[in-house]
Amino acid sequence: MEELRWIARDDLADDLERPMLVVAFRGLFDASGSATAAVEWLTGRIDHTRIGDVDPETFFDFTQERPVVYFDERGTRVLRWPRNEVLLARTPEGQRDLLMVSGVEPHLRWRTFANALSEVATITGAATVVTLGAMVGMTPHTRPLSVTGSSTNAQLADRLGLDRPSYQGPTGLVGVLHDTLDRAGTPVISLRVSVPHYVPDTPNPKATRALLRWFEQVSGVSTSYADLDGPAADWQRQVDAAVAGDQDLLQYVKRLETQTDQTEELIPSGDDLAAELEAFLREQADDPDTGLPG
Image (tube, rainbow, N blue to C red; front, side):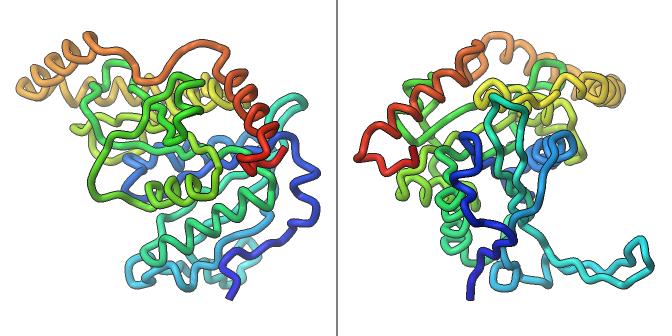
């Protein structure tokens, strides 16, 4: 069977402006739903169309991720399966077009699923992939939530000043996807935000804002992340109030603040990140040994 189901794919690679594939999944790599919320934020502000999806049939244990029955606006009964859709967003002139996949981390056949996403990049001519993630960490809620940018591609990491991954241990679909893209020769960048571990797993607009800010910095695509200033400030006030009522937790947060103030954010700053990425991809395209789309 064909896991990757296309609605429209003819001449996609020739019709897009320097496309980039952006991926986020609800699951291990999505603390507080911050990463998938970032993609949802983009789809809510950039015109987009659904051009395909990944058939859920062989990738999910439906006793864990059940389909949902609901009635649509016409009163028709509809069955909705877990979805991983491929969306195409055409950005303003001069910016990259985006392919976006945001859904649920599958339970089964991760290699096959990762190969399907790699095929999306190949068919659409996406020269690079960005994965968005959120993990619980030690950054206090009172400080800018740190974002780590990394790439397994040594040249890309050096060019953009990104980290090289150092984690060893159990991984999720995103780790499998990175390995698959590496083997296919597709450069991939990971952006992951640190979510305070003492805050309940509820929506965190401050974390989503941090991810969007750095995604804009790297991609050059406008994200309107500043529109989340208000929701992020509201979230922080709510956590402030909860922490103030627990003296032990309050002292713990103060210790985290001291530690954080002595470290630096793990992703480079500067307005030239997107330009450096463009230069890297041009060089790769000019090198026949890379196999990247020109």
